[in-house]
Amino acid sequence: MITIERLDHIQVCIPIGAEDQARQFYTGILGFKEISKPEALIPNGGLWYQVANIQLHIGVENEINHSKRHPAFQVKNLEEARKHLVENGVRIKEDIAIPGMDRFSFFDPFDNRFEFLQYKAQ
Image 1 (cartoon, one colour):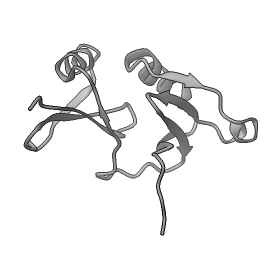
Image 2: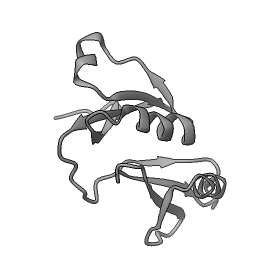
Image 3: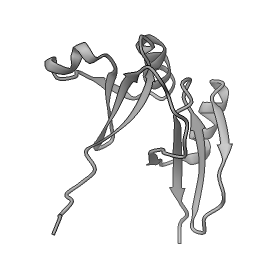
Image 4: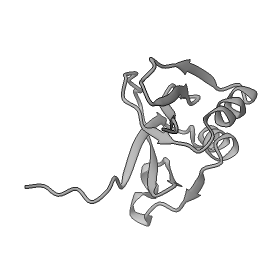
């Protein structure tokens, strides 16, 4: 049997050489905390962030494929988060309603999709 302890990290990708643009978005707009990558992985490019109790790894690759894959982050104030993203020109996508939850998706400058969600009080 496999016993999962926790989610450690998720990875999305950006084009090679786009780290500065990624920092503007992930650090500047989202306010994520950049962390150092292990020395052995620095030559691969990309960035790492600590987001709550998981890490977001931003890798680089030649070809970016668009799909439904995405990480979802539970936030404390969904409407405040939405307002902040809209004010910063971030593209928002309204998602299909799910009972007991408010949510929406948004896209980074590289078309990676992210979901923010907030559970409704019961």
